[in-house]
Amino acid sequence: MSLSSLAQDEPETAEVILAIQLEELKALHHHSDGQRREDTRDGMALALDVYREELQNFRSVLADFRLGQCIGTALDEAAVQAALDLAEQEAQSRDRLSRDISSDTGSVSSEASLNAEESSTANSEDDVYHSCAASAASNEADETCFGLPALQDATDQPLGRLHACVVCDQALTTHEVITTPCSHTYCMTCLLTLFETSMRQEDLFPPRCCRQTIPLEIAEPFLTRESTQQFREKTIEFATPDRTYCCNPNCSTFIPPTAISDGHATCPSCHDQTCSICKQHVHVGDCPQDPHMRQLLDLARTSGWQRCLDCGRMLELVTGCNHMTAEFCYVCGLRWKTCDCAQWDEARLLDRAHQMVARDPARAPAAAAGAGAREEHVRQIQDRLRARHGCNHRSWIRREGPRRCDECRQQLPLFAFECDRCHIWACQRCRLHRL
Image (cartoon, rainbow, N blue to C red):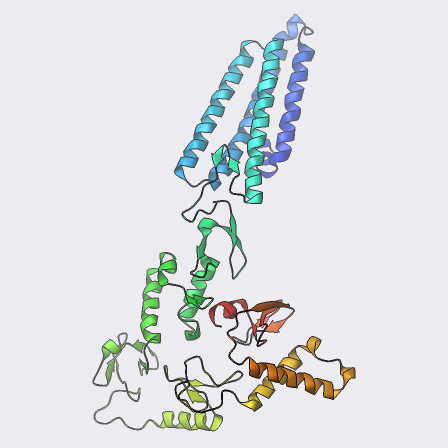
């Protein structure tokens, strides 16, 4: 391995090698002083000069490498300029040192000066190097590198401080993360993924963390122009009740309310016209009865589904109370709290209790306790679910082991988060963005 590669890969080892070589140079000076024959003086002096030049080059490599490390962490122009000024001072010091050494190679006092200044410079550089390393390792705001104070951004956070992305847990510096209104930090990739996913999954729109909406302005500098325009279009689409989509099956583009007149909706993409009432091709006269829609409504009635009052989609309640996210009752379909329906279905509540017991045998009574103990455990969970049906999922615990998210149904190989009130299991994304 070359000295340059060693200085970059193992700087501490390179420091030790430099110190040893300096001691060797000192020993050679003392050994050769007064003992060299006249006919070998020129050859020995030439060898020492070459040796000294190699040491100076090696020391320059180390200094340049440490300077590069510090400049990499100092983005502020003033800090970079100060680091360059210090490097220039070190270069001048090396020039003076070289001139002093060259002026009297055989002088003991000159040798002592050389050794003292080289030792002082090496120690100083070593201090600077370890200061930079300590700053990167400990992430403390008061560390300095090349004599420069730690930089701070607009939020008074030290530049070297690391922040963990709340989704992927990647450790990044302050200028590499984005802070949401709830003070969580995201890496750019995870935040953009959230925005892109929210435009495909309406239940994630608008993007939010801890139930607080993440404004478009935070991610807009990192989105493409097309993605930004698409996000604004989706904002209009998802806020529109009784939406109309192009009846052309090869298009199916959302038609905004501004493109609908007298029940005729003109597609902004293919320019086909759609009836905004029956959602079929535009027709003359009254809107005929749609047989496919009638079949779907009959199936929904038989299956116990309900139609969302906002978007018109069919919904099936798998678990939980009858209060739907879109603020309507799952039993009768009316707006929430405008009917006398029960807040939950006891049969569905019992099924949920059995599911929770079956999926978490560690908390269930031992088999030796008998079926009675198991049924009592199921009844306790059912009572707990009934008492906490309006859970706001504010407190979570981490459960290790393979599990499946109750919201997105994703299989989680390592762990899941469990609400300590209603015991729902959720992945990190659903915990932050859905619940």
